Amino acid sequence: MPVTTALRKLPWQTVFQATYLFRRYVFAKEPEDVDYMVVEDVTTEELQRLFFAEGFLKGDYASYYYYGEELNVVEGMYKDDEYEWYQFHIRGFETDDGMQLRPHTELYWRIYPKKHIKLVNLDVAEGIELMKPVLDEAGLEYEVVSV
Image (cartoon, rainbow, N blue to C red; front, top):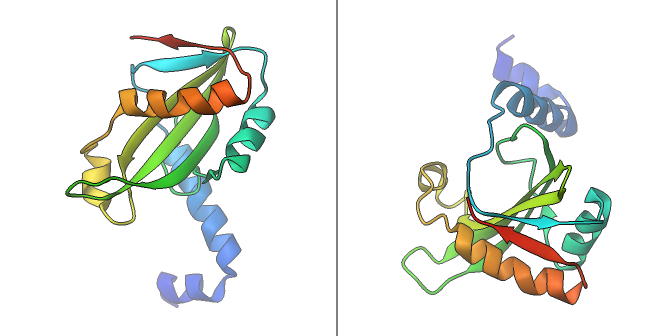
């Protein structure tokens, strides 16, 4: 029986989970050196609840996994430019200094898969600016670290 036929007979959750695990353990990457935010005295779970309340969704089902990544959330966004559809993506890493957040905006992967992978219009500074009011409103202190 061909592999594609066998996969169609499996429950979609099984195929989805297998694909997720394959990407996580085969295609894991080292985090890039980019500017980031450090938030102290907050757990991954607390940040995840905050971001979910703000309309973010789990982002780790359809993205690369970075070693040490504990948080991955995403929210769709519209910009009035030639591409229009973007995503606001936040990755989080637990460190000795606190939770290291790496917010950024980038082209929406489902509409622009190749340009998304090539990092066209990826903007870390914009992600940090969008993240500030979310953390301020939640009463969380943070530090922006420039690399």
